[in-house]
Image (cartoon, rainbow, N blue to C red; front, top):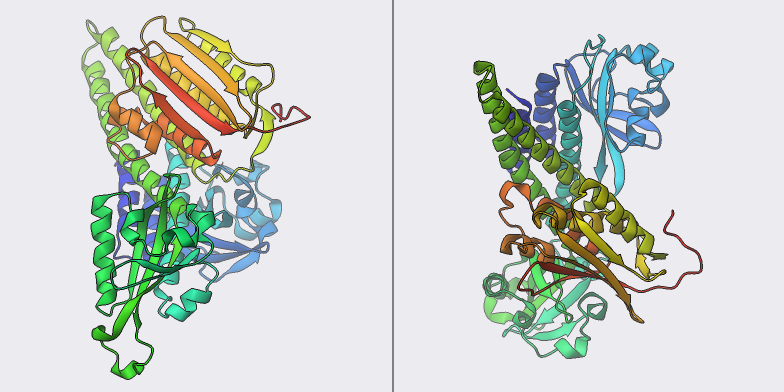
Amino acid sequence: MNSISYREDLYEIFINKHQSVENKIHCALQLGTEYLDLPIGFFTRIDQDIQEIVQVVGEHPLIQPGGSCPLDEAYCRRTIERESPLAVENSTVSVEISETAIETFGLGTYIGAKVVVGDDSYGTVCFADENERATPFTDSETHFIELLAHLIGNAIEREAHTREIDERDEIQRALVDASFDLVFRFDPDGRFVFISEPVEDVLGYTPEELVGRPFTDLIPDEELVEQATETFEQALSGRSIEEEYLVIESKSGNEIVFDVRKVPLYESSVPKKDQSPTDIVGVLGAAKVATERFQREQLNHVLNRVLRHNLRNDMNVISGFSGELVKRLEGENAGLAKRITETSDRLMSLSESARKLDENLDLNPELEPMNIAPVIERAADQITERYPDANITVTLPDELVGLSTLSLETAVWELLDNAAKHAGNNPEISIEATTTKDRVEIRITDDGPGLPPSERLVLTTGKETPLIHGQGLGLWLVYWIIQSLNGELTLADRSVGTSIELQLDAGEITTDFSAK
């Protein structure tokens, strides 16, 4: 079984809704020992410099569930400090593994990755052998364990969220629970009778603007209106309802995703033992913003589909043509070799885009005023070197101050790369920027064929599309970065080419932070 098949099996383990997280991790450890050909797999929890073994596959006298040791004496000491997996084929000559760890555990081969839950380091997932490994770990093997660590972190976070939802069985607790962002009450017709003050910070409306209005006014899609109306009617029938990922439109037109709890509100004069649906006078509810988790799950779904289908298809192409080359030692060999090269390049490009997306997804950058002109110029210079036939014109003021981070350079680079790659021979690309009192506007224009509708949708809304051959991943990356910078992205209508405008909040600086 090849590396793609093992990754597919790994995804199948974690999307199984009928398995507990513990069982999923156990099955994943078994799969990892088979794929990596290492006899020991283990999952650890690290807290206050103590490593505790949580789950184990394989036999080792000191690596047992419940076992613990100081982190300084563990092979995982460096793993928890790294952003990428640690792979060691011979621990005795590795500077990454301490002599104390080697003397204690006696492992010759080790590969491990950090597990992150939310924004915090949770522990590690590792595979090992008491013997040394004769060959280096491959990129596919390190990608496998990095993916496994990511899926474990998501599963643990998801389980914690589900447990939190299940424990909210009393509306009084919901009202005092600080984790809820909004508390509200509807009358039997679905109109707001009350909504808590934070609604202005979350949705932009004052409570007075919403009282008396039906809740369906805030739902942007007819299908979602039907779904929300159905759960409201269930609450009116006497049921307590948990509604996950309800989309609400803010006053400014942005879509915000909520987890919502709705419970029936009974006539206060009726004793609890005598209450029936005929005594219900409204619905009481509480909501928690879940936009970030929703976006993370949506992106994971896209990455899953792209990796499982696009990469698998490309690997089949590579395998097919490689087989042909073995049979054909003359004639069309040159053409086949070229196509193999092109397919390999596309596969590597797709993998790189997926990696960048994964890295940028959980970013919560602290925005600061910075001169972004050098950031844009660097991106333009890099694209000029990569595509010598492209004519890129940059028109910027000497100082262009916006609230940003250096991730803006990646977004501009992706947009320029997309234009240079798809705008035809000798493309003409221009970058212009202007600033007002409140906003910085960056406009990128090319003379190419224009963006397909599916890619326009990705760039402006971040909504999932088929992503044929994975071309939309770079644009997904742009969308997430601009979102994280509190910016806006618009596409201008043009008869020829594409014009994309990025808007950021303006700022003031006395020092140039762009070189940080």
